[in-house]
Image (cartoon, rainbow, N blue to C red):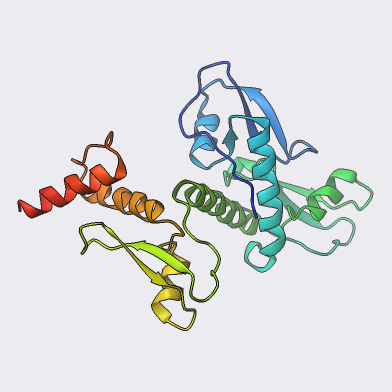
Length: 235
């Protein structure tokens, strides 16, 4: 199970030490003082900046596991290329064109071997950029999972699960999970099942917030739902 890690969402103060994922370092990450330059702001939007060393280490562990389990999707090189073969890697794996670098593989070069072992060598710059995009989506999904705490793996048959249901006054309904029921499997894949009622309600409120931004955000989830129900009844 992945340990929770938190990425920065808002710009920190200038001069604050932040941590970011990068292939430039043998550790897989570096720290730097925030300067507010364009590339830093971009990294902020793609989940590459972290507030603490613990967070970036946990993000790196998640990334290693994800890369190892998604070989076909990421299309990275898995076997050692012939000496002198032109291959590609990303310094920061951020998807920017300037991030793509080509090298001629040297099996004696420790850095080349490290990139190969860690799944960061590609046959083309296109494969590299596409992989960077997939990694960004994976990091984004992991942050959403931690925030809304939806189920990512199928629970045992008969386990009580909750989901948002706007037809009820409570805003939440439960069912017993059954892998043979198609809509149960679909809801699980879409991240719509929760192990706790309060998590389903919070996710439902967030969804409705996008539709009805007038809902007071300072209220508790139950109060927010009551507000929405009251608004609906007056229509």
